[in-house]
Image (tube, rainbow, N blue to C red):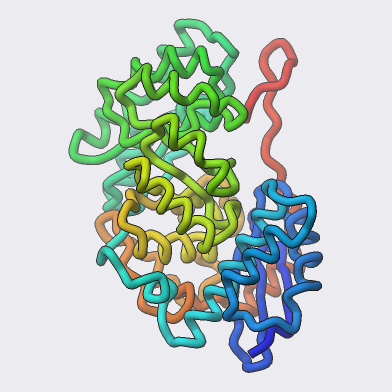
Length: 381
Protein backbone atom coordinates (compact mmCIF):
# COMPACT_ATOMS: atom_id res chain seq x y z
CA UNK A 1 0.00 0.00 0.00
CA UNK A 2 1.26 3.48 -0.91
CA UNK A 3 0.25 7.02 0.01
CA UNK A 4 -1.07 8.74 -3.11
CA UNK A 5 -2.69 11.99 -1.92
CA UNK A 6 -2.53 14.41 0.99
CA UNK A 7 -5.24 17.10 1.09
CA UNK A 8 -5.79 19.73 3.76
CA UNK A 9 -9.03 21.57 4.53
CA UNK A 10 -9.45 24.78 6.54
CA UNK A 11 -12.83 24.29 8.21
CA UNK A 12 -14.73 26.58 10.59
CA UNK A 13 -14.57 27.51 13.33
CA UNK A 14 -10.74 27.26 13.54
CA UNK A 15 -9.54 23.83 12.48
CA UNK A 16 -7.42 22.16 9.81
CA UNK A 17 -8.24 18.64 8.63
CA UNK A 18 -5.93 16.34 6.67
CA UNK A 19 -7.05 13.56 4.32
CA UNK A 20 -4.44 10.96 3.38
CA UNK A 21 -5.41 8.72 0.45
CA UNK A 22 -3.83 5.42 -0.61
CA UNK A 23 -3.66 3.31 -3.75
CA UNK A 24 -5.78 0.63 -2.03
CA UNK A 25 -8.64 3.00 -1.34
CA UNK A 26 -8.10 3.31 2.41
CA UNK A 27 -8.32 6.89 3.68
CA UNK A 28 -6.92 8.29 6.91
CA UNK A 29 -7.93 11.56 8.58
CA UNK A 30 -5.99 13.75 10.98
CA UNK A 31 -6.14 17.21 12.52
CA UNK A 32 -2.83 19.12 12.23
CA UNK A 33 -3.41 22.56 13.67
CA UNK A 34 -2.11 25.33 15.87
CA UNK A 35 -5.07 27.57 16.63
CA UNK A 36 -4.52 30.90 14.89
CA UNK A 37 -1.71 29.48 12.74
CA UNK A 38 -3.68 26.98 10.67
CA UNK A 39 -2.42 28.29 7.32
CA UNK A 40 1.18 28.02 8.49
CA UNK A 41 0.70 24.42 9.61
CA UNK A 42 -0.99 23.72 6.29
CA UNK A 43 2.17 24.87 4.49
CA UNK A 44 4.29 22.61 6.72
CA UNK A 45 2.08 19.60 5.89
CA UNK A 46 2.54 20.39 2.20
CA UNK A 47 6.31 20.45 2.62
CA UNK A 48 6.30 17.12 4.46
CA UNK A 49 4.14 15.54 1.76
CA UNK A 50 7.15 15.63 -0.58
CA UNK A 51 8.61 12.80 1.49
CA UNK A 52 5.39 10.88 2.21
CA UNK A 53 3.82 10.56 -1.23
CA UNK A 54 4.66 7.07 -2.51
CA UNK A 55 5.55 5.72 0.95
CA UNK A 56 3.93 2.83 2.84
CA UNK A 57 1.51 4.43 5.36
CA UNK A 58 1.90 1.53 7.81
CA UNK A 59 5.52 2.42 8.66
CA UNK A 60 4.26 4.94 11.21
CA UNK A 61 7.22 5.08 13.57
CA UNK A 62 9.74 5.22 10.74
CA UNK A 63 7.90 8.12 9.15
CA UNK A 64 7.59 9.89 12.51
CA UNK A 65 11.36 9.74 12.94
CA UNK A 66 12.05 11.00 9.42
CA UNK A 67 9.48 13.80 9.61
CA UNK A 68 10.71 15.08 12.98
CA UNK A 69 14.44 14.55 12.51
CA UNK A 70 14.98 14.56 8.75
CA UNK A 71 15.27 18.33 8.56
CA UNK A 72 18.35 19.99 10.00
CA UNK A 73 16.13 22.57 11.79
CA UNK A 74 13.73 20.74 14.05
CA UNK A 75 11.02 21.10 16.65
CA UNK A 76 8.64 23.90 17.47
CA UNK A 77 4.85 24.06 17.39
CA UNK A 78 4.37 24.31 13.61
CA UNK A 79 6.38 21.24 12.68
CA UNK A 80 5.08 19.29 15.68
CA UNK A 81 1.48 20.09 14.73
CA UNK A 82 2.02 19.11 11.10
CA UNK A 83 3.54 15.81 12.18
CA UNK A 84 0.74 15.32 14.72
CA UNK A 85 -2.00 15.43 12.11
CA UNK A 86 -0.07 13.18 9.75
CA UNK A 87 0.56 10.71 12.57
CA UNK A 88 -3.17 10.63 13.43
CA UNK A 89 -4.06 9.95 9.81
CA UNK A 90 -1.50 7.13 9.51
CA UNK A 91 -2.82 5.48 12.68
CA UNK A 92 -6.33 5.86 11.23
CA UNK A 93 -5.20 3.99 8.11
CA UNK A 94 -3.40 1.35 10.18
CA UNK A 95 -6.55 0.64 12.17
CA UNK A 96 -8.71 0.47 9.05
CA UNK A 97 -6.20 -1.85 7.36
CA UNK A 98 -6.50 -4.23 10.33
CA UNK A 99 -10.21 -3.56 11.02
CA UNK A 100 -9.40 -2.51 14.59
CA UNK A 101 -9.58 0.68 16.66
CA UNK A 102 -6.23 2.34 17.28
CA UNK A 103 -6.24 1.51 21.00
CA UNK A 104 -6.26 -2.19 20.08
CA UNK A 105 -3.04 -1.61 18.12
CA UNK A 106 -1.51 0.14 21.15
CA UNK A 107 -1.90 -2.94 23.35
CA UNK A 108 -5.63 -3.08 23.94
CA UNK A 109 -7.96 -1.15 26.24
CA UNK A 110 -7.07 -0.61 29.89
CA UNK A 111 -10.55 0.79 30.73
CA UNK A 112 -14.12 0.49 29.52
CA UNK A 113 -15.11 4.17 29.77
CA UNK A 114 -13.19 7.45 29.72
CA UNK A 115 -14.21 10.41 31.86
CA UNK A 116 -14.67 13.75 30.06
CA UNK A 117 -15.26 17.28 31.29
CA UNK A 118 -17.25 20.23 29.96
CA UNK A 119 -16.26 23.87 29.62
CA UNK A 120 -18.22 26.68 31.29
CA UNK A 121 -16.10 29.62 30.08
CA UNK A 122 -15.09 32.20 32.66
CA UNK A 123 -13.03 34.79 30.77
CA UNK A 124 -15.60 37.42 31.64
CA UNK A 125 -18.30 35.41 33.42
CA UNK A 126 -21.77 36.68 34.26
CA UNK A 127 -23.06 33.56 35.95
CA UNK A 128 -20.59 30.69 35.89
CA UNK A 129 -22.44 29.00 38.73
CA UNK A 130 -25.58 28.70 36.60
CA UNK A 131 -23.50 27.46 33.65
CA UNK A 132 -21.87 24.82 35.86
CA UNK A 133 -25.24 23.74 37.19
CA UNK A 134 -26.54 23.35 33.63
CA UNK A 135 -23.57 21.18 32.67
CA UNK A 136 -23.91 18.80 35.60
CA UNK A 137 -27.65 18.53 34.96
CA UNK A 138 -26.77 17.02 31.57
CA UNK A 139 -24.66 14.36 33.28
CA UNK A 140 -21.14 15.77 33.42
CA UNK A 141 -19.26 15.05 36.64
CA UNK A 142 -16.52 17.62 36.01
CA UNK A 143 -16.42 21.16 34.61
CA UNK A 144 -13.62 23.54 33.69
CA UNK A 145 -13.55 27.31 33.97
CA UNK A 146 -11.04 30.04 33.31
CA UNK A 147 -9.71 31.51 36.52
CA UNK A 148 -9.80 35.10 35.31
CA UNK A 149 -9.58 37.53 32.46
CA UNK A 150 -6.37 39.55 32.15
CA UNK A 151 -4.37 39.94 35.35
CA UNK A 152 -1.72 42.51 36.21
CA UNK A 153 1.70 41.12 37.17
CA UNK A 154 0.79 41.91 40.78
CA UNK A 155 -2.92 42.63 40.90
CA UNK A 156 -5.12 44.10 43.61
CA UNK A 157 -6.69 42.25 46.53
CA UNK A 158 -10.07 42.96 44.92
CA UNK A 159 -9.06 41.15 41.70
CA UNK A 160 -7.75 38.21 43.72
CA UNK A 161 -11.02 38.08 45.63
CA UNK A 162 -12.97 38.01 42.33
CA UNK A 163 -11.15 34.84 41.30
CA UNK A 164 -11.78 33.11 44.61
CA UNK A 165 -15.42 34.22 44.78
CA UNK A 166 -16.13 32.83 41.31
CA UNK A 167 -14.49 29.49 42.11
CA UNK A 168 -16.40 29.31 45.39
CA UNK A 169 -19.68 29.92 43.55
CA UNK A 170 -19.02 27.08 41.11
CA UNK A 171 -17.99 24.70 43.89
CA UNK A 172 -21.21 25.51 45.74
CA UNK A 173 -23.22 24.95 42.57
CA UNK A 174 -21.81 21.52 41.71
CA UNK A 175 -21.21 20.17 45.22
CA UNK A 176 -18.36 18.07 46.52
CA UNK A 177 -19.23 14.91 44.59
CA UNK A 178 -18.16 16.52 41.30
CA UNK A 179 -14.89 17.98 40.12
CA UNK A 180 -13.81 21.46 39.15
CA UNK A 181 -10.83 22.28 36.92
CA UNK A 182 -9.44 25.81 36.98
CA UNK A 183 -7.54 27.06 33.92
CA UNK A 184 -5.07 29.88 34.60
CA UNK A 185 -4.29 29.95 30.83
CA UNK A 186 -0.80 31.27 31.57
CA UNK A 187 -2.32 34.63 32.50
CA UNK A 188 -0.75 34.83 35.95
CA UNK A 189 2.73 35.96 36.79
CA UNK A 190 4.67 33.67 39.10
CA UNK A 191 3.93 36.09 41.94
CA UNK A 192 0.17 36.08 41.32
CA UNK A 193 0.05 32.31 40.90
CA UNK A 194 1.87 31.93 44.20
CA UNK A 195 -0.66 34.26 45.84
CA UNK A 196 -3.82 32.70 44.39
CA UNK A 197 -3.10 28.97 44.42
CA UNK A 198 -3.12 28.52 48.22
CA UNK A 199 -6.40 30.47 48.39
CA UNK A 200 -8.00 27.87 46.09
CA UNK A 201 -7.17 24.96 48.37
CA UNK A 202 -10.48 24.96 50.32
CA UNK A 203 -12.33 24.31 47.02
CA UNK A 204 -10.15 21.29 46.14
CA UNK A 205 -9.95 21.63 42.35
CA UNK A 206 -9.12 18.49 40.42
CA UNK A 207 -6.19 20.48 39.10
CA UNK A 208 -5.12 24.02 38.21
CA UNK A 209 -4.06 24.25 34.59
CA UNK A 210 -1.13 26.26 33.18
CA UNK A 211 -0.59 28.42 36.30
CA UNK A 212 2.14 30.29 34.44
CA UNK A 213 3.10 30.53 30.78
CA UNK A 214 5.50 27.84 29.54
CA UNK A 215 8.49 30.18 29.41
CA UNK A 216 8.28 30.27 33.21
CA UNK A 217 8.53 26.48 33.64
CA UNK A 218 11.68 26.89 35.71
CA UNK A 219 9.41 28.25 38.47
CA UNK A 220 7.00 25.32 38.50
CA UNK A 221 8.83 23.62 41.38
CA UNK A 222 8.32 26.65 43.62
CA UNK A 223 4.62 26.71 42.72
CA UNK A 224 4.23 22.97 43.36
CA UNK A 225 5.84 23.48 46.77
CA UNK A 226 3.59 26.45 47.57
CA UNK A 227 0.24 24.64 47.38
CA UNK A 228 -1.63 21.36 47.76
CA UNK A 229 -3.60 22.09 44.56
CA UNK A 230 -2.47 19.62 41.86
CA UNK A 231 -0.86 21.54 38.99
CA UNK A 232 -1.19 20.71 35.30
CA UNK A 233 0.54 21.95 32.17
CA UNK A 234 1.38 20.94 28.63
CA UNK A 235 -0.86 22.39 25.92
CA UNK A 236 2.10 24.54 24.79
CA UNK A 237 4.73 21.84 25.16
CA UNK A 238 5.47 19.91 21.99
CA UNK A 239 7.64 16.89 22.79
CA UNK A 240 8.67 14.52 25.57
CA UNK A 241 11.80 16.64 26.04
CA UNK A 242 9.64 19.73 26.65
CA UNK A 243 7.77 17.82 29.37
CA UNK A 244 10.88 16.67 31.24
CA UNK A 245 11.33 19.87 33.25
CA UNK A 246 7.66 20.20 34.17
CA UNK A 247 7.38 16.60 35.30
CA UNK A 248 10.62 16.78 37.26
CA UNK A 249 9.22 19.89 38.97
CA UNK A 250 6.33 17.81 40.30
CA UNK A 251 3.32 18.76 38.18
CA UNK A 252 0.54 16.27 38.82
CA UNK A 253 -1.05 16.25 35.36
CA UNK A 254 0.52 16.27 31.89
CA UNK A 255 -1.67 17.85 29.19
CA UNK A 256 -0.16 17.23 25.76
CA UNK A 257 -2.36 18.12 22.80
CA UNK A 258 -2.50 15.33 20.23
CA UNK A 259 -2.76 17.94 17.45
CA UNK A 260 0.20 19.92 18.78
CA UNK A 261 2.68 17.44 20.26
CA UNK A 262 3.54 14.95 17.54
CA UNK A 263 0.28 13.02 17.49
CA UNK A 264 -0.60 9.65 18.98
CA UNK A 265 2.95 8.33 18.70
CA UNK A 266 4.63 11.09 20.70
CA UNK A 267 1.81 11.61 23.20
CA UNK A 268 1.93 7.93 24.08
CA UNK A 269 5.60 8.42 24.96
CA UNK A 270 4.74 11.54 26.96
CA UNK A 271 2.18 9.48 28.89
CA UNK A 272 4.85 6.88 29.68
CA UNK A 273 7.25 9.60 30.82
CA UNK A 274 4.54 11.10 33.03
CA UNK A 275 3.95 7.68 34.57
CA UNK A 276 7.58 7.64 35.71
CA UNK A 277 6.88 10.79 37.72
CA UNK A 278 3.53 9.49 39.07
CA UNK A 279 1.71 12.08 36.98
CA UNK A 280 -1.62 11.60 35.23
CA UNK A 281 -2.55 12.31 31.63
CA UNK A 282 -5.36 14.72 30.70
CA UNK A 283 -4.96 15.52 26.99
CA UNK A 284 -5.69 19.09 25.95
CA UNK A 285 -8.40 19.17 23.28
CA UNK A 286 -10.63 22.22 22.67
CA UNK A 287 -10.44 21.24 19.00
CA UNK A 288 -12.32 19.22 16.39
CA UNK A 289 -13.55 15.64 16.00
CA UNK A 290 -10.31 14.10 14.79
CA UNK A 291 -8.24 15.54 17.63
CA UNK A 292 -10.81 14.31 20.13
CA UNK A 293 -11.04 10.87 18.52
CA UNK A 294 -7.24 10.53 18.64
CA UNK A 295 -7.16 11.68 22.27
CA UNK A 296 -9.76 9.12 23.32
CA UNK A 297 -7.94 6.30 21.50
CA UNK A 298 -4.85 7.15 23.54
CA UNK A 299 -6.88 7.51 26.74
CA UNK A 300 -8.19 3.98 26.39
CA UNK A 301 -4.67 2.60 25.93
CA UNK A 302 -2.61 4.26 28.69
CA UNK A 303 -2.93 3.40 32.39
CA UNK A 304 -2.37 6.91 33.80
CA UNK A 305 -5.19 8.62 31.90
CA UNK A 306 -7.20 10.92 34.19
CA UNK A 307 -9.82 12.84 32.21
CA UNK A 308 -10.42 14.16 28.69
CA UNK A 309 -11.16 17.71 27.56
CA UNK A 310 -13.73 17.99 24.77
CA UNK A 311 -15.22 20.89 22.86
CA UNK A 312 -18.87 19.97 22.24
CA UNK A 313 -20.68 23.27 22.83
CA UNK A 314 -17.51 25.14 23.84
CA UNK A 315 -17.59 28.94 23.52
CA UNK A 316 -14.95 28.90 20.74
CA UNK A 317 -17.22 26.92 18.39
CA UNK A 318 -19.33 29.76 17.03
CA UNK A 319 -21.20 28.85 13.85
CA UNK A 320 -19.79 25.31 13.61
CA UNK A 321 -19.33 22.40 15.99
CA UNK A 322 -17.30 19.23 15.80
CA UNK A 323 -20.44 17.11 15.40
CA UNK A 324 -21.16 18.93 12.11
CA UNK A 325 -18.38 16.99 10.39
CA UNK A 326 -19.40 13.49 11.45
CA UNK A 327 -21.60 11.03 9.59
CA UNK A 328 -22.66 9.63 12.98
CA UNK A 329 -22.15 11.66 16.20
CA UNK A 330 -22.67 8.58 18.40
CA UNK A 331 -18.97 8.29 19.44
CA UNK A 332 -19.29 11.69 21.14
CA UNK A 333 -22.56 11.10 22.94
CA UNK A 334 -21.44 11.07 26.56
CA UNK A 335 -23.35 9.27 29.30
CA UNK A 336 -22.91 10.33 32.93
CA UNK A 337 -19.86 12.33 31.90
CA UNK A 338 -18.17 9.32 30.31
CA UNK A 339 -17.22 8.36 26.75
CA UNK A 340 -17.81 4.77 25.72
CA UNK A 341 -14.89 2.80 24.35
CA UNK A 342 -14.83 3.30 20.56
CA UNK A 343 -15.19 0.13 18.54
CA UNK A 344 -14.91 1.47 14.99
CA UNK A 345 -11.76 0.88 12.97
CA UNK A 346 -8.95 3.44 13.07
CA UNK A 347 -9.79 6.58 14.99
CA UNK A 348 -13.35 5.33 15.33
CA UNK A 349 -15.14 8.24 13.67
CA UNK A 350 -16.61 8.50 10.18
CA UNK A 351 -15.89 11.92 8.68
CA UNK A 352 -18.54 13.44 6.42
CA UNK A 353 -16.20 14.28 3.55
CA UNK A 354 -18.84 16.20 1.62
CA UNK A 355 -19.49 18.42 4.65
CA UNK A 356 -15.76 19.01 5.07
CA UNK A 357 -15.33 20.01 1.43
CA UNK A 358 -18.31 22.38 1.62
CA UNK A 359 -16.98 23.99 4.78
CA UNK A 360 -13.52 24.38 3.27
CA UNK A 361 -15.00 26.54 0.52
CA UNK A 362 -15.61 29.13 3.25
CA UNK A 363 -12.57 28.29 5.36
CA UNK A 364 -11.56 30.58 8.22
CA UNK A 365 -8.91 33.01 9.41
CA UNK A 366 -9.41 32.53 13.16
CA UNK A 367 -7.06 34.47 15.40
CA UNK A 368 -6.97 34.44 19.16
CA UNK A 369 -7.95 37.69 20.91
CA UNK A 370 -5.19 40.13 21.80
CA UNK A 371 -5.69 41.71 25.20
CA UNK A 372 -4.35 44.89 26.78
CA UNK A 373 -4.18 46.21 30.31
CA UNK A 374 -5.85 49.47 31.31
CA UNK A 375 -2.59 51.31 30.68
CA UNK A 376 -2.44 50.04 27.08
CA UNK A 377 0.30 47.46 27.62
CA UNK A 378 0.00 43.89 26.37
CA UNK A 379 -1.85 41.36 28.53
CA UNK A 380 -1.71 37.55 28.27
CA UNK A 381 -4.79 35.96 26.70
